[in-house]
Length: 65
Image (cartoon, rainbow, N blue to C red; front, side, top):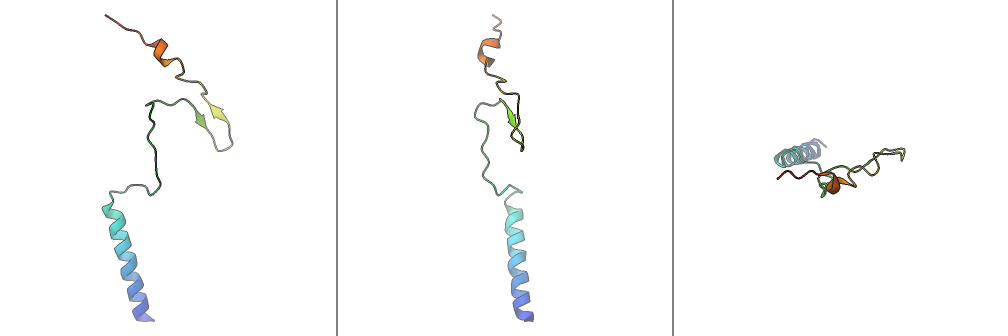
């Protein structure tokens, strides 16, 4: 029993070391925002905040020559 415990502790230590070497990155697959701005936020309850923000972003830019 003690030998199994030692083996398991060694395995856990190896996993912790491997996780620390990954630079603290999340294990989930994250996707960067391709538009570089936020259009809206959806809460857990399903409420959508800021719907349509940035829709007219191209027309609102002022060009100074």
